Image 1 (cartoon, rainbow, N blue to C red):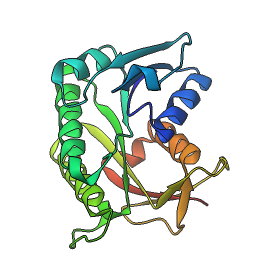
Image 2: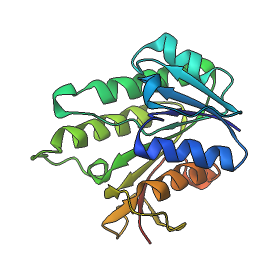
Image 3: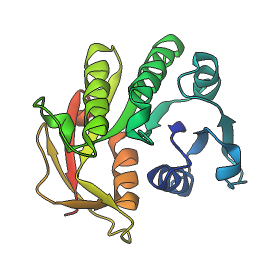
Image 4: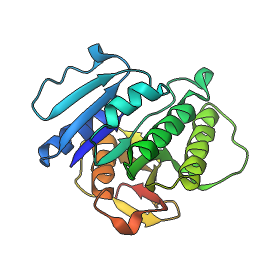
Length: 198
């Protein structure tokens, strides 16, 4: 497949690109700052831009078979830039006829209660993304994880549909593996999937 990855310069996004190429896929890495993304390999095209910019997003997904978005909110002060970007990606996918999309989130996506604390803005953004996916006509899967860590990959993870997974952590590498596996799981389409370390 040709997979467009949004948030490719982040720790999970880096892993998605590396693993996608290792599986034999072609990749498109969408990054805000090209200098933070040093990959120079065959089968990888890099697009620099703001994911809220429709033209930049359309350029990235042209010819893609699927989209993986591991975008995140860099700072609470930037809310709602994350969900604005996700809506732009969803809209562009609809126009381009790219139906399959996998989006990552945290476990706040499973609930709708009031959020407080340092990560409340992130949780609100994940809920907005969830609602935007549900309102779309795309073949979407949202993977929601607990704390994402820099632990070494284990090569396995726990998955449950429409509820939180039981673990309390997940490595970025294993989260990346989940996103690519999800593209091959038609039974996960239209589901909020809980994923954690096995």
